[in-house]
Amino acid sequence: MEIARVLCPVDFSDFSRHALDYAVTIARWYHSTVTALHVVPATALYAGLETSPPIPWTSEELEQIRLRVTRFVQQGGERGVEAMVAEGGLAREILREAERMPADLLVMGTHGRSGFERFLLGSVTENVLRHASCPVLTVPPKIADPVATGSTSFRRILCAIDFSPSSMKALEFASSLAQEADARLTLVHVVEPLPEFVPSTVRGLDPSEYEHAALRKARGDLHEWVPGGVRVHAAIKEIVVPGKSHQGILSTAQKEQSEVIVIGVRGRGPVDRLFFGSTANQIVRRSTCPVFTIKG
Image 1: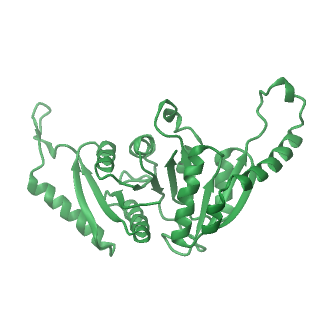
Image 2 (image 1 turned 180 degrees about the horizontal axis):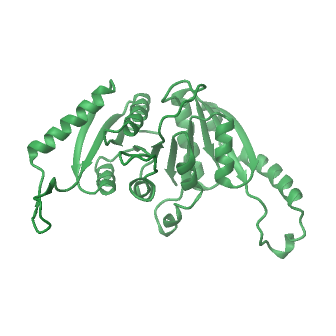
Image 3 (image 1 turned 45 degrees about the vertical axis):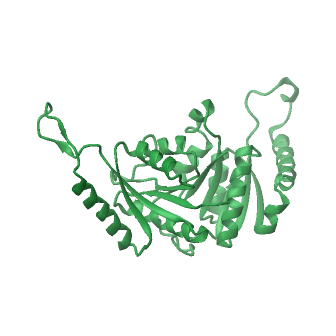
């Protein structure tokens, strides 16, 4: 896997500083370039009256903002990160710059300067996750974690597997990441409970018998599904648990003290509109560790 260009939107908050730390860590492993992007509204302000025309940014003002981005980056001790300013809608400009570069990875915080500890999903982050063609790493705020080996450590990686083409993409990404970080890679597959409405051929099946049989089959399927080449590059642990998908993945991440979750999502198309409200959405919203979403 190649990651040559990393794009990280920043808004001068501690949340985006935390995301930038991750962007720089990954870039070091893959010898990548990092661009810190700050987006400003298309116009600086209005003259004071609703009927007044908007006043555009001057080139001097935009350069001052770019220098502020540079100082923000350097205050964190980072060097060699390109500072960039774009004008327009936040999600639109992030996506536009990601396509223009083109970026191999987008790294962004799940919180912003609006504060009140609210997720930005439903607006900027959701739009980026829906439409970005490259992998996206969403980074939650820092939490006190006495067992963590570092704020940007990826020594324990969890990859969610549902046997789909998108989860195979996620596995390839997680395997590469584990190789670069010398990490332990845990694979988790969640067996959903017996649906309320099932075909007549299985209506008499006892739920506990179904779960036992499904778990046994899933363990065998998971072991056979993993390509042999992946096992060469990383120490792999396989886990199969029952329950709702997002709950099983998140509870496993907590139990395994995972420092990052990798999950595959469907690519662009009509089904992409269902992405939020899905397992991936719940994981991004609820995870206390960073989450890679990989388009299949």
